[in-house]
Length: 253
Image (cartoon, rainbow, N blue to C red; front, side, top):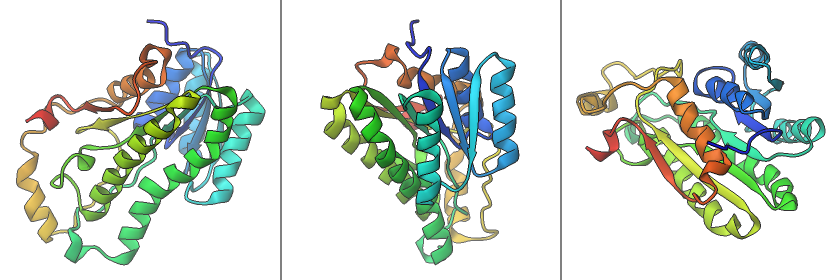
């Protein structure tokens, strides 16, 4: 399969571990240059090393992507080091505490929305002028099963991931004419270290716990990364506005 990724500039957020790291390494194996963006320095540096171990090139930018200054630093670094931004992967995410509306505090609500929806919006807005100037670009979001239904996460994460899917579709419609494609994966259960701290004896946990029985096989981070790289690549050149469920059939049940 010709991915067309050799020599391309790729930003991967949340690349310090899990699916983000697996995607960064996979892009590097395809010959892309990778900008690793993560909140944690140690994880970002470990991913840069993992990319180097497969013969690739990566740089790290550390910071909170809900901060506009960090967003500009990420984009400016990719442009200066790699000549532009060809691919943007939104993988950074924060899980809620499985809190339903009556249990969700202001801090939990605002932070989950900020990380899962506002930060991708800010970074996409900053990257689009560079893609539009080149007449090409591919943006891939990590949505979630929580964006497909109301029974997989708490109120904050469910609302944020539904918002992500709306943003994907809006971008696909409004920018396909200038050569920019936008798609998303919707992972099911995946073996990563994204923490889920359900509140003990909370109403949300009692409601959601019985609903996870049909979740299917737990995916590896590498399996999710393969879907991300495919959607970003030239092999998916005519795919735009698609939500690809990577969930072993969970969403079809």
